[in-house]
Image (tube, rainbow, N blue to C red; front, top):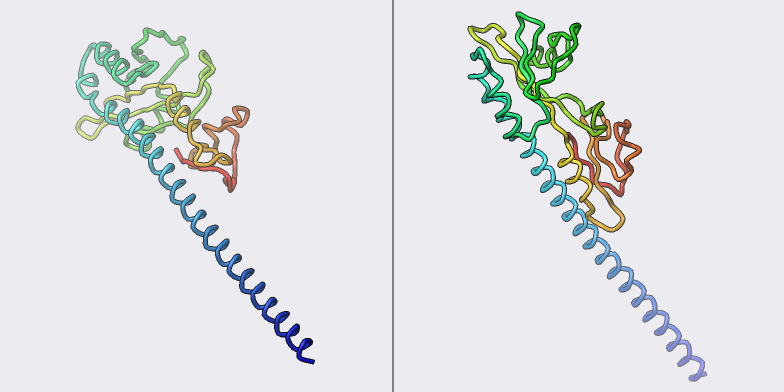
Length: 223
């Protein structure tokens, strides 16, 4: 009788100890997992913040450069100023167009065809419509095959449009920044425009594709 009672007590104690160890293990696992998830979230947030700042600074610098062309607008020979802008901003080409004529002056000496009218170009019309510096949606350059964007800024005199200055630039540096984003071994970064057009992605075949949402294993930056 006493032997049977003792066995039951030992069995009950063993069950209690086993349950306690299991509960403690589950609690420890949950705590560690929660801590790791928080750390991963903090790391991803830091990566997004740092790279977003770098990209914003890249674009902001070009914004500022384009706002310094007042003298070129008022000059009869703006070519020198356009070339200086091209050099300082590492632009592919810079140009100026006036509302009174279909002629445009290009820093690289490009002579457009006779039917070319800059006033009908999207960069010109978008800048005039916005009344401030605009950046076009990234597009593929016909000559280089790389992605470029166009900056365009309208200038006014006595509240009337005097000219629009434009500048084309490859966004290779931006793409390289995004390509280097990998907060974890199983994650990657990609860059989209506000409408969801992919600008930079590890899969080059998805460039300029449209996405409706980001994946859970990625870091998304918006342009």
